[in-house]
Every structure is written in C-alpha cells, then in structure tokens.
Image (tube, rainbow over all chains, first blue to last red; front, side, top):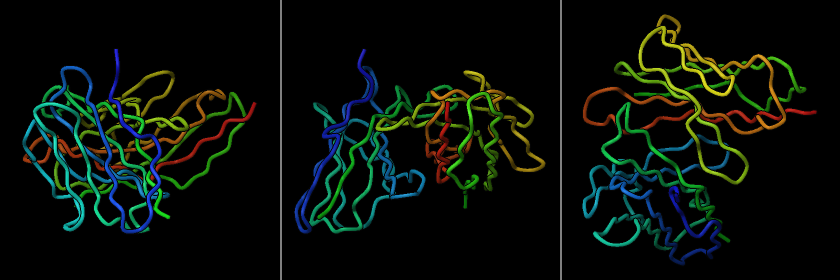
Length: 116
Length: 115
C-alpha cells in the first residue's frame, strides 16, 4: 500500500552538475505535480504532468529545469548545471484524476537537494 | 494573484494548551481552503479542508472555519499534544477554472508542544 515514493531522500551536488529527482506516484495515479519549497518558504507549484504530457509548466524556471512523466517508469525532475539557489526541498504529489475537491493530491516525503 | 498569509512561527506551547494559527488569503476567484501538516522529515498530509463560506473542516481535534467576510481560515485545537509538533501549512485552491489543481501555500508555522 505504498504512497507517493520519491528518491533519493537527500541529494548533494556540486555547482554545475546535474540533479535528477524521481517520483513514483501512488498506484493507479496518473497525474503528477511537482512543488519546490525554498528555505523558510511555503511550497510553490512548478509543473503538472500526466502520462507523457506536460499540462502546465508555468511554475518552472525557464532555463535548466525540465520534467517528464513517461509511459513507463517514474516522473523525473531534472535540473541541469545546478546553482546554490537550487538548494531546496522538492515535493511530488499525485492524484487519480485531475485534482479537484474530491481528488486530493497525495504528497511524497520530498527530496532535499543541497548544492555545494 | 492568489496568496496565503499565515502567522509567523515558531509557536511553542505546553501540552493541553489551546492552539490558534491564523491564516488569511487573497484570491481572484472563490477558493477552497486547506490545512496541511508536515511532520519532521516527511511530506505533507492533508489535515482538513473547507470548500465554501461558513464550512467548518475538522479532523483529529483540529478545526477551521471558512470566513469569507474576513478572508480567513484560522486553525484551532482545544488541547494540543506533544505529537502535534509539526509544521502547519494553510493553502488554497481555486474551485473552478483552468488551473484548479494548483495549491497555493502559506510559508508554514512551526509548532512545538512541550510535555
């Protein structure tokens, strides 16, 4: 009865490296949402994906960030050429249908990304 | 735009004390309101929600009432326990329209309950 699984839980990268964050939604869920939590801030929406489709990426930085949710396998949030400002907790959520009042988002435990 | 403002923490209480965490919002539409709780090292869990004015959400002894006239959704609990120590986030979601899947969160309030 697994919930939303994110890995790794902690990720350390040096400036200029790439970071890949993985999210496996709950069983039966095909809608995935990524949020970023900067230090002492609330979570901010980044992107909403369905299988093989990006529905809304309005919260994604224009450069270096990308997300995918392939037909098979987990959703991936990819950050290229990381900088210190990318240090944050990244949370994934999933739902069985497009989120509405009766389709809540279930959150994973997050990936804490630290940039040296 | 949409935003949520909640009281600054940290909040430190003794066990069995009364808890209030204030939350106010601004929204372009007619939002649904939520409180999420984040225990140390974990993700967010939905604590309670309310979808229209004067609705009261409740769960685990916590409650919050949707006040449209004051645009508020304050979280209360009559008697806190040590196990309630966590970060509490107030959030909104617009009930209709093209982006009715985006949760907008406040900054969170850290609650510590001492025995």
